Amino acid sequence: MKIAQQLKEKNIAEYLIYMWQVEDLIRANKCDIDEIRRNIISRYPEEERPALEEWYGNLVEMMRAEGVVEKGHLQINRNVIQNLMDLHGTLLASTKYPFYNAAYFKALPFIVELRQKNGRQESELETCFEALYGVLLLRLQKKEISQGTTKAIEAISSFISLLANYYDKEKRGELELD
Image (tube, rainbow, N blue to C red; front, side):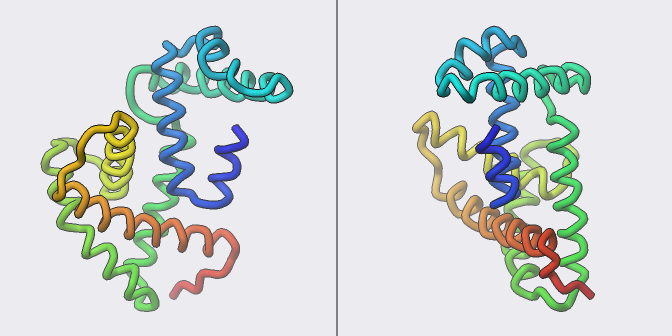
């Protein structure tokens, strides 16, 4: 919970990936608060457990209510993607951010290729986050990552990092848009 709050303030991209990981942790524990308490919450200091139990409990209820118990993402996480997509469109339309456009166009061939492989109709940003999350999972499993994937992830990561930086500036009122 604290981690999520800190990441949301510091880096919206890391926050979103963290929240996807939390969704998967909840699923791995069968959306059962007792299992979550046993397998996750019990590892934290006693004084943090009540707040964590409430936070995880709320997320479990939201996942059930929104029908994302088996797959998909919570509306709060989809809202983050939508906000990033809105900013992305604004930045692309602006003449003030050529480095952003360059990062996007460098990542675009990889995004197109990944979208074709996925066979799903999702936004370009969702494709980017899915790729970043997928590589995170591969690394956690200590699986090998091909050179091609590494090259794609570098371009996508740079692009998403820049977008997250602009998101932070916009939130602070420091982003000058046309």
